[in-house]
Image 1: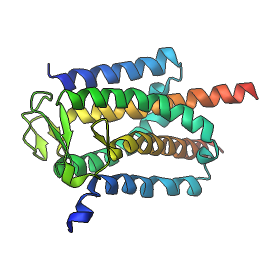
Image 2 (image 1 turned 90 degrees about the horizontal axis):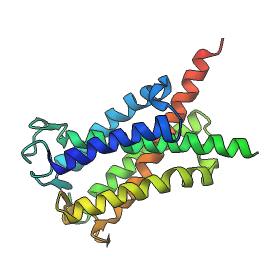
Image 3 (image 1 turned 30 degrees about the horizontal axis):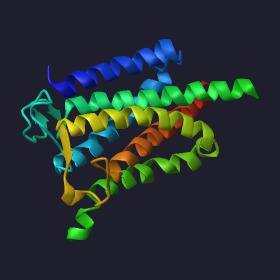
Length: 111
Length: 110
């Protein structure tokens, strides 16, 4: 498996485990999270499409599922970005929101 | 587009994200920005993990950044915008999450 593909898969699993078991925020079981994510993913496709379609960020063909050609869709890409980026973004935003909720609960309980 | 503006291509995307999400704060009367410590503690540790991943992947040549479309300043091989990315995107995600929380709680109210 390509290196970015493997790392992105691990990141998604780690973020879900952190949400469910480590922080016990269980966002992935909530309607709020999936509604928010449905909105976020649309904007992720637009902004990532900008970064990758214009070649601001360029990927090595060894690291991703696709061949490294910049196409709008297909060859391991969606809206120009490697599909691995979707996993990267999911893990980043899930972990940040879970941390936000977890810290919020701690701060409230100390008051 | 002039050569000067081209260097702001990445920064422009971050500005677009902030312009799109910061108005949620006022519109839904959120309290996210009034909790700087909570924001800092939510964003910084996660950002450090992702920056570490980014540094390793960039050093390994998995991806690279176009010098013509980023600002000149680099820190450990990454453009400054890449560090800002790990603050701006989580902030946008938290604002969206909190706005959706408000919308769903209003719907549940009688």
